[in-house]
Length: 273
Image 1 (tube, rainbow, N blue to C red):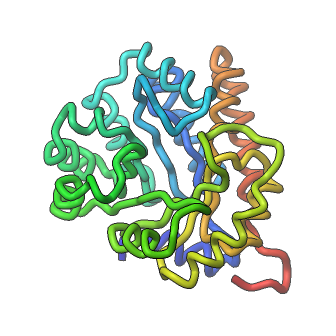
Image 2 (image 1 turned 135 degrees about the vertical axis):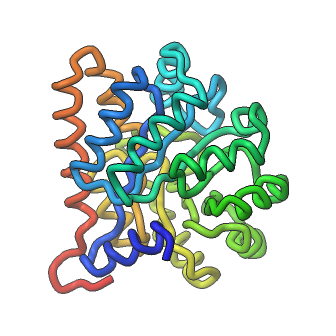
């Protein structure tokens, strides 16, 4: 079984969904970034979603854009990034999903990037600006090196395209909870339940919901809608942005936030997944 299989199996046995926090690697610097990811794990993260910083992250809102700018300014490089991943992998069997943009991968080349990612301990890739129709070479390299794939669907994705996307997906389907970019939002989309219900009729892959999940209440709504995992990014990254000059206070705040979010993944008593 893959680390993803193990993670989703474990949370089902615990009658909850997976909690998947996101962070931008190298934000605010590589050393602190590693501490943030370790804090996620210590507080109960089931899966890590790690963003590789890019200068023009088209799928990200202002909070994650600024995080990417801080990371780039801190001097992150592929070699330093993969070294950090190796250190983290030595400490946990939690799955690591890498979210990146095509230019980053093409800089090293599909084959070299996938080889380095797999060797470091990455489990899956989601290239945010590369749809499956344009991913033939990437998918070939990923399969060669044992990397799983993640692709995105939304409430507007028609059934035939969902089937096509799911045939190219092997880790989980990333279900966007709202149209647009990532960010911190007070209100939660009312279409998620319907989207998940539609997907359940088309695929048996795990479904993880992200984009705009900003409170434990949002995580609970995703859980009750039937998702297998909840992805929270901008709300946690905003803590890094606010407190990065005070590492101890920042890590403590992150730990508290992750524990609150994770608590919301537990199904109410008497309700089974």
